[in-house]
Image 1: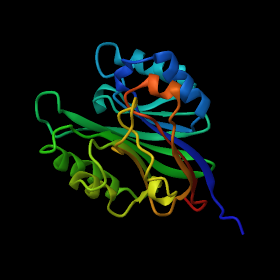
Image 2: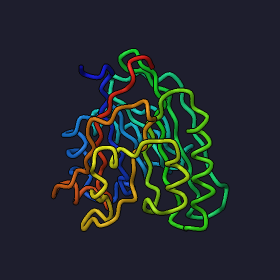
Image 3: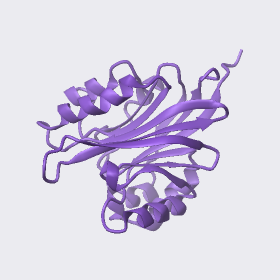
Image 4: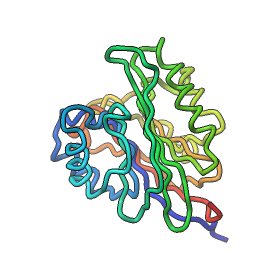
Length: 233
């Protein structure tokens, strides 16, 4: 018997501050047609609201949460998804280029509520564990099923990765696709981008979109996962 549930297509994508081929970027996402998109390195400076809206529109999506308050982490949804509540966090408050944050949105689709979350941890290994702990604290406190995408800037053997992963399902591992690398986009040989989900959520498929167009679009390749949300919510 088929497992009951509500399908959800998710993309998690570090878009490199739109510093690459933006036309290719829009084409990659539009071709995927996600229900929700978790963005790292989105707009976070002057006129960030307008820039976030324009970015979302280029993908055929709308802004749910993030931007400057989440230091470039951005959550986007299709019109199929209703956004019920949002919040943003900054962590830790260290000055300089390693300042990071996270965005969260409580969403509803097909009668099922879930928490969508995204973050981007520091490139500095000394800063990542504390940032991971703060991101994980919010995820662990959630009562709704969690869908969390992140650029962790380390592999699955790293302490920050292990901290965030605890109690959650790595969609790549669940689908037998942990050998699919995301970085660097031009010659991917590291898996530093990840999508974690609540164990109540089924993983139908996981892949990394590795096409010539995707390699032009960013210095990361996007994660694409098809999920099945628990019908009971």
